[in-house]
Length: 178
Length: 133
Image (cartoon, rainbow over all chains, first blue to last red; front, side, top):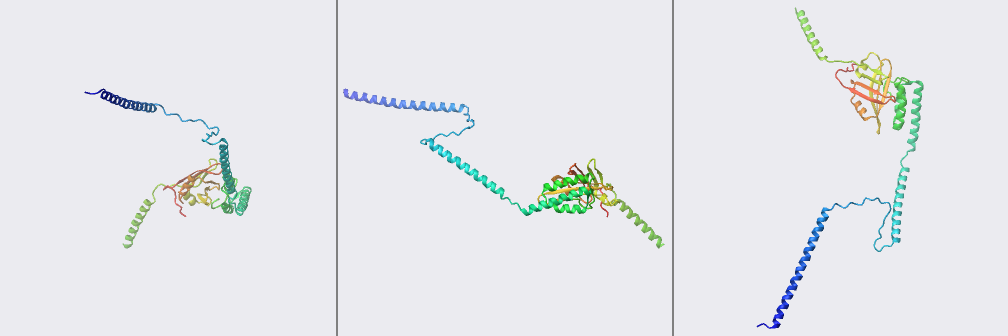
């Protein structure tokens, strides 16, 4: 025959078991809801269009202060960066100018070019007056060629060739005219 | 009798040589002395024809002058009347055409008011005459 006390102990055990079952059930319910929510969120993200990237034009420098950084510190950093960039630019410009100035210009070859160009020009002018272009003129003109720039040479040809073709100058050379 | 036979052999031999000679020199032949039209600004002629002409005036041809940094080609011609023309070009296409010019080519060229060559044609064909002297 069970005593009242025994019945009470059995009842307490049953209640405890029921409470435990309730806790386990509620935990599982919560987990299921969490999973369901997560799935829903993932589906919604997949269905939604990709977010547009911001395309606005930057018209001013925007600096978000780092946590703990003061605005004075940021200004000082910016000044330092700008100064460094300006210094680098000035340095590069100076180097380029220096290189340009130190390009090899041989005064002797410059003088020679001037002299030969004057000689070739005089030769062409003389031919335009005398109206004759013979072997002697052709030889002399050929000798100056390597001392003239392509532009100078071409410029002289543009004077003598039309004159020959218009029969204003008689081409008497037996060999090459130029 | 011996003399008659010798004569016959000689005649037959001469006939064979003549026949062979005729065959060897058959084929279309052309002759084109230097022609210049200063109005149209064109000149043409066969180098062999100019060279073989009876006059000692006409000539036609092209040449190329090269420096390390530039190449210029000139063409020039003079007809039997003494009219001379010339043009120059640095165009790679025209310079290349002149590389194909031979001593027996047919040459055609044109130029503009500035004396720049605008076209150069070189014909290497069988009918052009060879220089014979």
